[in-house]
Image (cartoon, rainbow, N blue to C red):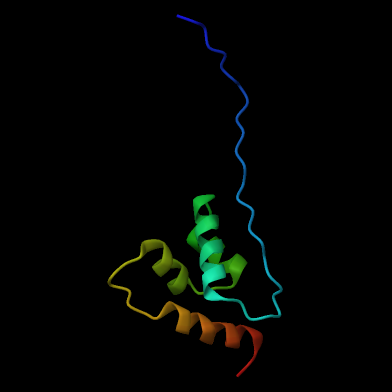
Length: 88
């Protein structure tokens, strides 16, 4: 059998997360993609919430996709964005 070379160096690329202007309202679909990327990169739910300024309920529902958590994520996110930006 041929001998295989084993690399001793591990290479892992971190997912690139683009953070939009914090003064502009964001779209839920874009934030949801960022949440999924961060979770795949190994970020915890509280870290994601803090970095993206999104409530725990929205992040947790997206990650778990639980039938027991029946909220309209887009509507809740829109309301929270208005509160975050002071647009009421």
